[in-house]
Image 1 (tube, helix red, strand yellow):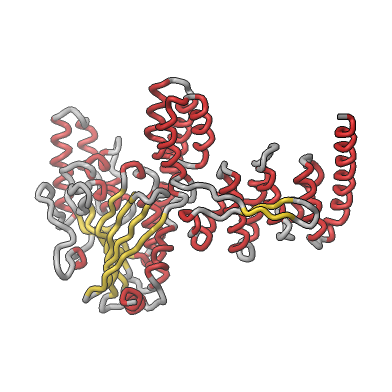
Image 2: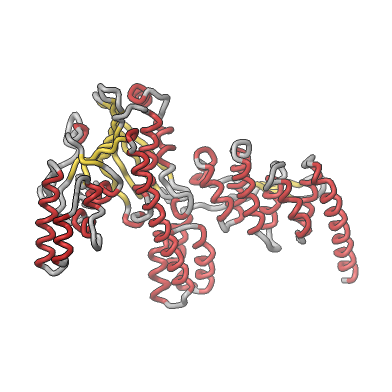
Length: 491
């Protein structure tokens, strides 16, 4: 309760730790090994504000990221969110995590305060990895690229009321102004020229460049010269500020989009490469891919892994470990089976615990699970939860997920029951993508169990366009039943 009271007092809005966690949860991708990830927020009320820690865990409840923040409202009425740094597991780096988180935080600040001086502050390059105790130089480049300006005065939030929150790194010089950064740059370039790593022409271009913001340094070329400098030990730490309501949100948006596009392309390429390695038959490539599959994750890896387990029993343990990285620990529950008055069979599944919260807080992730997971039981459970919780607000998303599930699961085993569940969901949606999609399916479906399910769904849909297709499908079903009876009689 004290944390909620502090958040309400500081922001002026009814916000809780759970609400804060849901905001940060949007920083997670809706697919892959993080599709069932969780966010935990712990907070502490301070004299001048509210400090909190956000912890991200994957589908096996392993910590993959930790970030610390302080939130205050100044005497001028502006909100300030100070970033004390983020630790990110090496397997998750390069996936646009920082970009997604920045986007959510800036959007949150903008929604909570219209004050022109509402801002996000930090010490670029001043964050220490809490697990290894070393400073992370990446921030000097990343936050310059994102559009943070050099703060005229470092934020007092860098130090908490009881202890320093941004420790001094004796190996790096703190930045007082951009003139110091320029001197450091030219000194570093001079050393690179002497080492033969930079041409005299590039050095001359750097000396002549107009460098008025950290972003100018980050974009200095040719050959990414500014990036290399900011990532080196020669670059100074610098106090950064981004004024959200003075164009900062739009400025950062361009960087966020570029980072997510680049990260997405890299992840897709890695995923394709790993899948090719799993199927290659080359022992070294297969074993290397198994060791790294958690880096890309995702439902797309489940079927190749299961095939590999069947083909290479000696790799069973390694495959099992890889599957755990991708899927997490869960055992599909026994279905609850019911029988209809027509003698038909239906089943329902309950989402495993690590997926259950998606039903309340993450409709897009739940839809992704329903639309793409290769295990029909999990996909069906996700679809049923999606329809029960979100059909009224997002009928198109539900219809799309149901249509994709319906198209994926064919065969003679119990997977047809998942398709039946998709039919029942589609029948609840009278608009495009729902009943109309069932009408089209009724014309081509050849699995009698699914045909019967579609027929009953169309009969009960009370949709004027469904009457004739329902009658035609009924005739097809009777003809197919007669054909089956004749075949049985001949046996």
